[in-house]
Amino acid sequence: MSTLKEGDKAPDFTAKDQNGKTVSLSDFKGMNVILYFYPKDDTPGCTAEACSFRDNYQSLIAKGFEIIGVSTDDEKSHKKFESKYSLPFTLIADTDKTIVEAYGVWVEKNMYGKKYMGTARKTFIIKADGTINKIIDKVDSQNSSQQIIDLLK
Image 1 (spheres, helix red, strand yellow):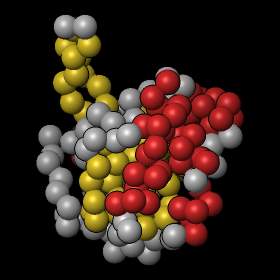
Image 2 (image 1 turned 45 degrees about the vertical axis):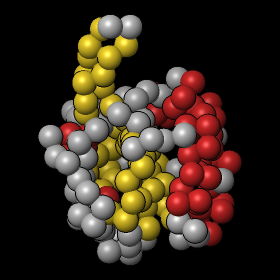
Image 3 (image 1 turned 90 degrees about the horizontal axis):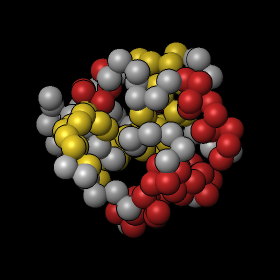
Image 4 (image 1 turned 30 degrees about the vertical axis):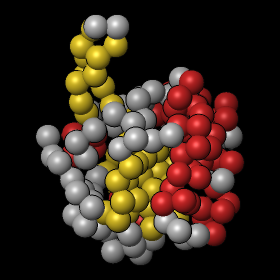
């Protein structure tokens, strides 16, 4: 498992989005990217986080950002999630877990004393040159986009 730090080069990846289109991080070269990892489509915290990005999408785009959400759900699940909440950004299906592992967010979790592997909620802000500008470990899912805006002031 990698431990990425601010200033590191963001690992490139290629995977399918919610429309079955192949997307690579390198497609966004020259843009600032908000790459956010979330555990599961259509769950309360993940929905709140996605809707926060949706509601502030125009202001984030105006600040020069592209938003990419990543979870281990499949394309069909992402498409339903996108449609249900009118999400205007890319959702990557990391079903083989290569991206979550490259970013070190595939971790052991503990719920009600039961240990299992899952995706940590974590956000990486990647500069146009492909380096990691900021890493948000403690994501406020209700206010995730505002958290980023405040961080970059």
